Length: 414
Ligand code: ADP
Ligand code: ASP
Ligand code: MG
Image (cartoon, rainbow, N blue to C red; front, side, top):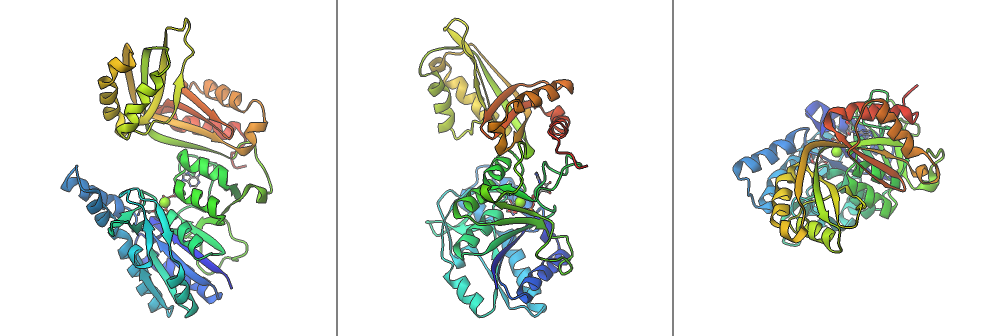
């Protein structure tokens, strides 16, 4: 007997038929003798619809009320799945975040889970009951519903798995697992059988939305083994010891280590360049201090070495949605910073090459630059770390660049 968490995303619960299919996956595990907690998302598109309603009601809405609105999608799915399980003869009940309780901090709209008491769930397992938990939500210190940021049901699932000391956490989604790049962009993407927590963390933060970044962080810290797999496979037919899918685990469990594991990309980046900024101590602080105060998330930062020590150029990226705010903040701080020209370009894409082996192999970055130049893709900015290279390019070249890099590192499916 094992204790498992099964998480189903939006497309997997998109309608009643799909929820019935999910119920069959759950029934299979119950019949195999396992203790099961299920975490569900809202039906596909529901959360975006709810977000749209909140914005339509007022663009300056109260974040606590936003959370009470957008968390409702998961409540519906949890109830529906519990009913369908009951109709299949499986003892089940739904749980909302405040009932368990999934405690969070006060950051409404992007709250972090601080504590979960798994005792109640474990008591129910002991009487043979399945827990169907609404993902994406918890309760804040102000005793109000708090949501965990888009894609947050992944994090709910991992947090529950850690709290009940689950043997594993299965993330069921609309693809077979984690691929070398988004299979929707590159049909030649290859399914990865294992990915280390570190690489998955990079892939998720650099745009592979198959897992929410925080869910990977939490799995890594608590050593929760994650299986990403498809909810569209036959619920009963597959050999459960030998299914397709991806295991996310610690690096020492990985059998085959690659130099490059995958390619990720994020859209909607904006580039800001400050031209002829004085080259003296305190300038970077004068630029990024006010931006941080205005809650603008700055990502890639590139500063030139100045030719004569007097002025230099500074380029960085912010999310498209924050561009206007960022420009206003910089204009206001112009005297303090001392730049001559402020330039900006919205609609950029950041393409990243990820692999834990890259730190110990020469020439990985050069291969990327050569391949992009052969495809006529102009590079605007570059940043690197031990396990990734990120390149900023014009949005029009996004798919071309992803495919070119995927192919040049030998990741294409045979
Ligand atoms: P869910 O609703 O189940 O949470 P998401 O839409 O959040 O599903 O995540 C699954 C999607 O992530 C896939 O449909 C796929 O397009 C996208 N994706 C992006 N990068 C990758 C990748 N490297 N491997 C697999 N899927 C990816
Ligand atoms: N329903 C939420 C969203 O769409 C959470 C999730 O699906 O993970 O962002
Ligand atoms: Mg998701």
